[in-house]
Length: 147
Image 1 (spheres, helix red, strand yellow):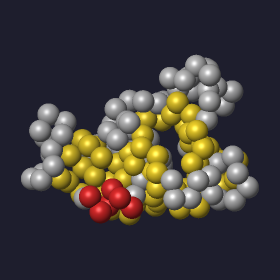
Image 2 (tube, one colour):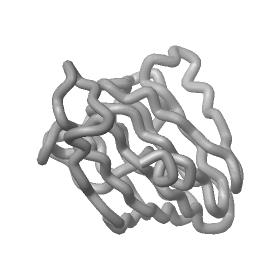
Image 3 (cartoon, helix red, strand yellow):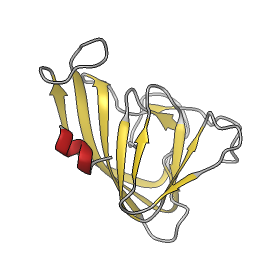
Image 4 (spheres, helix red, strand yellow):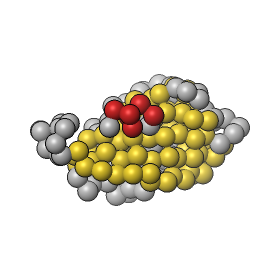
């Protein structure tokens, strides 16, 4: 798990409720497994760890969403700009190849955008996902951002 977290990283494709749709984004599920005897969180209950690779085309975005637990994103190529629904100023934070973004999860709504000119590639590891549950939760646009 530690090795997977070190090389992996927060976006997901597909959701469970109405929210904002992503655009120009594709993802591939790499692996999913249940941690049931070594690391326990969520009230000392087993949880799933999910790994995914995501590509966002220039001008594309993830749509507003959150995750049930933390997500660790490693940027492989391009730029990855995140915006938090809780930020009244809607100020983006830019990540570049080799950077790591840790999404705190647990319902924190955000959007990720490719505001660059080349495709963005990221690796994501989602932690503390309830066993069998979705690792992405759709969220409405917060109203403090123009997108």
